[in-house]
Image (cartoon, rainbow, N blue to C red; front, side, top):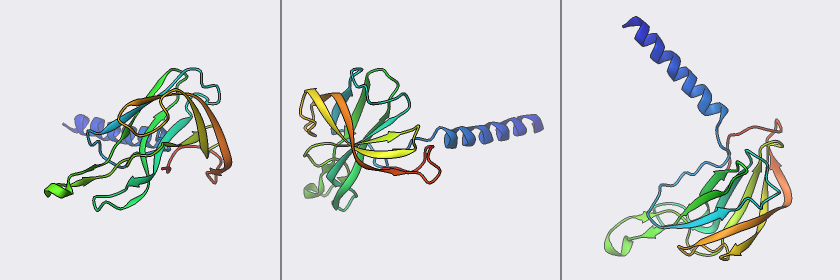
Amino acid sequence: MNILSRSLQSLTVLFAFLSITFAQHFNIEIAPTGESTLFIFTTSIASLEVDDEVGLFDADGIIDDQGNIGEVLVGAGVWTGAQLEVTAIGSVDLSDFGGPVLPGYNGGTMALKVWDTSEGCEYDATYGTSFGSGSFNGLFSNIISISTTGDPVCDDDGGGGGGGG
C-alpha cells in the first residue's frame, strides 16, 4: 500500500508539472452550449508556426449567465502545421421560458487573435477566407490566410504559456 501511495503521489506531481508546462495561452472559460460555428484553418496559412495558437473572439458576445455583453473567447486551437478545426461556442438564451442564459458568441463576425509561442506575444489578426465570411452563423468558414496587426501584448519574460483570452 505504501508503494501504491507513493506512485500515486508521483503521478499527481508529474501531471501537475505537465499541465503547467504545456498550458495553452487561450483558455476557454465557457461551457459548450450545443450552438456552434466551425472555423477551418487550412494548410495554406504560412504566417503561423507550429505551436502558435489562435483564439476566436466575439467582441459583443454574451459573457455570463446574466446576459451581459462584452468580448468573450469562444474557441481556440494550437497550430500543428496541419488543417485545424476550431468550433466556436454560441450563446443560448432560454430566459424567456424560465431557462438559463448560456454565454458564447452573439452573432456578428469573428475577431481573431494569435499567440506567437516563440515570441511570447499575443497579436490581433486579420484573415482571409475561401468559403464563408468569418461570421458566427451556425455554418462554417475556411480561413486561408492570417496577418497579424498592431502592437503585440507580450509576457514579461518574452515567452511561454499561461494567461490569455
